[in-house]
Amino acid sequence: MKCPFCGYKESKVVDSRPADEGSSIRRRRECLQCEKRFTTYETVESLPMVVIKKDGSRQSFDRTKILRGIERSCEKRPVSVAEMERMASEIEQELQNSLDREISTEVIGEKVMEKLKGVDEVAYVRFASVYRQFKDIDTFMSELSKLLNEK
Image (cartoon, rainbow, N blue to C red; front, side, top):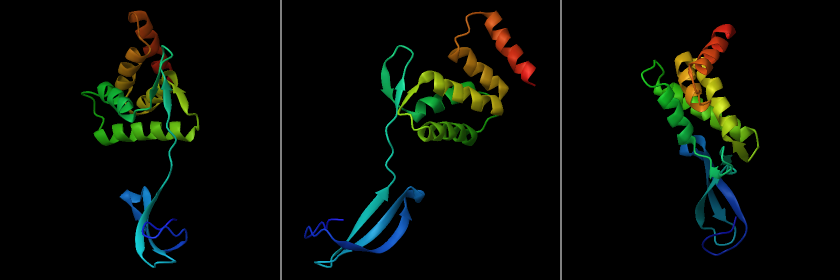
């Protein structure tokens, strides 16, 4: 690590501790030439994800959009905000772990429906009705029939 005072390229770590609730490491360093101390932070480099929309356009990934969709589906349902946050975080983590830098909205929508199905069936049907664009009562009923048959 290059010293910010004299520019010397060698330093030693004097102290390390977690920072930002464990998402980074704070290191106190000492320059081996001028002996001045300075602080560095080490964080995990996250690669940006791009979402491919149905019309083929691309947008940068935004976790808040997933959370908003979950919140709308769970409106007036007995699902806590913490549970909704957990679902959004799990989906984001699964997408990051997939190592695909381009993700289609279909993949994201299916993951949201999978999480909602395990938490609240009414919220699942609400989300599915918008996501799958139910055109009439027959498509709505066929989705409900699938849900009942799984039980």
